[in-house]
Image (cartoon, helix red, strand yellow):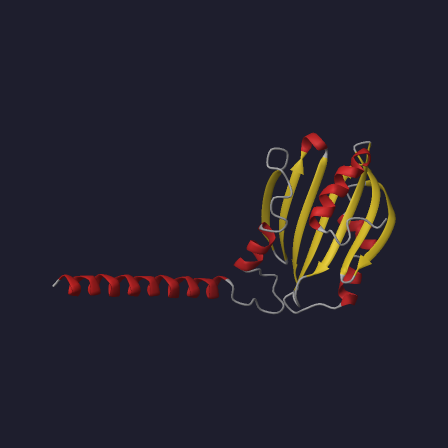
Length: 192
């Protein structure tokens, strides 16, 4: 009789595990379903990718972290007021795909000056370089009468997603900025 009870318990556990696994798989499929071309919709996997980019790089004791989901992007921010530093990860969504020409247009000088870094004064492009498909744009600018270095990395992440990563540090903290950059993009922490 004991053997029969054990068998029923084991079968019950196996069925329960199977139901849970099927439920999880269905949930992943629903939350990660492809988004339609022409929409700016993201999916759950986009949020996970953005939220888990460069884990452990920014110390929680110095850096405050937040995120937002917007049409055509998922943004993650790190802010360190005591360091006067800021970092931003944008997971750009191109649900119809993109070309190198699209990225050239998106990250054009005009867009840097008129959109991306519009809040900074005296923006000066210092350098542009790349390592394979990773691009780096380096600038110098002012904000509230303080001189800053601004670095913008751009890297394709599949056929429909692009990583756009910005770090802003005071000029005198260039070594600290490079130290963080080496952890995130060891193949291209700086142009020089």
